[in-house]
Length: 168
Image 1: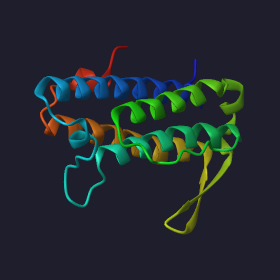
Image 2 (image 1 turned 90 degrees about the vertical axis):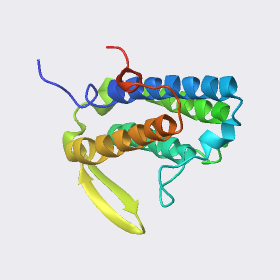
Image 3 (image 1 turned 30 degrees about the vertical axis):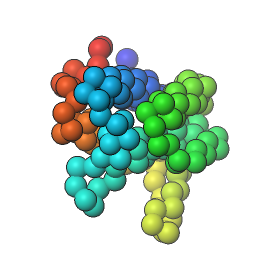
């Protein structure tokens, strides 16, 4: 059996967003146990020129919902990018997962050759469906999820590889 576009996208994105949600749960529990203001983690970054945790999660969810929408030919849901708490970040992840769950395999399968155009830094960039998923969305999505994990791990949250990978 061959792998189709739906199998390579929506279930993968949902799985990793679930892991990210659990990572945030651990971070909040750590903050509470250590009497750390949770906003310290929400605003933490690995380097001065990198985005903070909140923006890493916003971009990861944008990648996920944008992928499913563009490959299925529906409008990309718009979120405000105004999350400042763990609860708001969790709600954003949940909204993204709910959207992903609303997109069917029938809508995405066959999108390998679909034309996708993004505006990146003011410039239109054209993709074809399969390379868009495999060479743009998934690397960017994993980068921002991994960076969110790294920010929290760097700040003392007890996380391990299995928190990132999750259960199979």
